[in-house]
Image: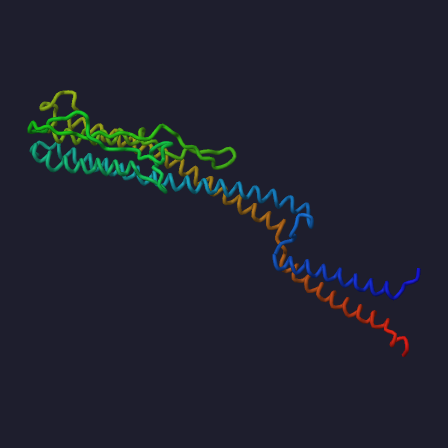
Length: 317
């Protein structure tokens, strides 16, 4: 087969184009730090990369859920702790009220006023919210959990005057909010206010009524009304219930923390695998790029000499 001048020129041009294309690909790899730009360049790694990215998005979703759940439960823990402190203060007020040296007027003016302040504070804590969502309302997160309203019935104070006491209403529902922390792991995020808090506030109201009525031993009012001594037992008992729900919430907080740590570990491992499939080894990439640039320059020089040799004037020398 006879090799013509045109074939030599075409081959030289083809070699230059091939080397330039390889150089361009290596430059792109180094610039983007990625092994491939399209799936067709490396179908096997591209398929693995897509699967890993899908797993990463799932892990991110679980991680975001765990973070939001942890924030919610931490807020619940803080609120329940505040209620326990209110219970301690209320018990001290009741014990002061049980002191026989105290007059009925002092119980009404001083202690009942302080107790009412604690009631209002307890209701405020019961209406704690996170990002505009009320944490003790069950599914009704857009609705306050509690409201303090006037009772439909009245009582008589220690002087026989008519007084309208307060009652507390629960406005939420019985919803138990489950959150998924993984494919086979879920946790109850919320504490229901009707179970953990309502009874506590009702006992505080009973203590306030007993102070208003000077009902210490049940002699000045109908027997059906709780005495101040009985309300002390009720407040302590309902404070214990608050503590039980706080303890349960704390155990679930540890579960969420453990799940979050596990998710972070898996995310790091997945990111490493993804990097192995996608990312360019920069030291290797730069070395290959340098070699390819040298090769390209050599091809240009050789091709230039080969094509120059085909000049008519070279033949005439």
